[in-house]
Amino acid sequence: MLSLGFDFQVTSLIGFMSSYLYGFIMPVFIMIYSIIVANRLIAKHVDRGSMAYLLSTPNTRIKIAFTQAIYLILGITLMITYATVLGIICCETMFPGKLDIPAFLSLNFGVLLLHFALSGISFFASCLFNDTKNSLAIGAGVPIAFYIIQMIAKAGDKFENLKYASIFTLFQPMDIIENAKGTGICFLSLGIITISLYAAGIFIFHKRDLPL
Image (cartoon, rainbow, N blue to C red):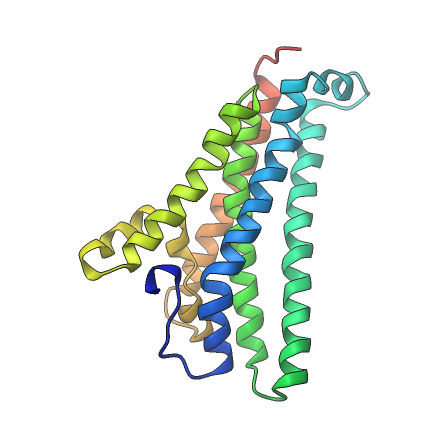
C-alpha cells in the first residue's frame, strides 16, 4: 500500500487526506483528464484534418496553440479549485476545526503545479505529432511511466533511488503539509517544467509542417 502513497501511521485529518486522497486519487484521476484533453486540443485536430479550418481563420498558429493551452490549464485549475473548496466544506461540516486549512491549501497548490507539469508533457506531445497514436504514446506513456516509477520507488529501500527518475518526486504531500525544507524548490521546479513544456509545444507547433 505504501507504493500507492497510503500511510497507515498518520493520525491527523490533514495527514489522512494527504495520504489517501492526494497519494493516489488526485494525482491519477486528474492526470487521466489532462492526457485525454491535451491530445484532443491539437493532435486530434491535425489527425482529422479539422486543424485546416482553424488555421483558415484570421488566427495565427501561436494564438491557436496558446488558446488551447490556456483551456487545458483553466480546466485543471477549476477541477482542483472545486476539490479544494469541497474538501474544506466537507471537513468543516463533519470535523469542525480539525482541518489545518493553510496546510490543505498548500497541498492543493502543490498538486495544481504537479498537474500543470504533467499536462505540459501531454500538450507538448500533442503539438509534436500529427496523429493521436503517437501523441498518446508519449503524452500518456511518459506521465504514466513516471507514476509507475514512483510506485516502485516507494515499494522499498532497494528501489528508493528510482524516485529521482520521476516528476512525482517533486510532489510529496507529507513534506508539503509539514512545510519541509526544499518544498519551495520543488514548487519552483514544477513551475519551470510547466512553462518550458508549454512554450516548447507552442513553438514547435508554430514552426513544423502540418499535413493539411
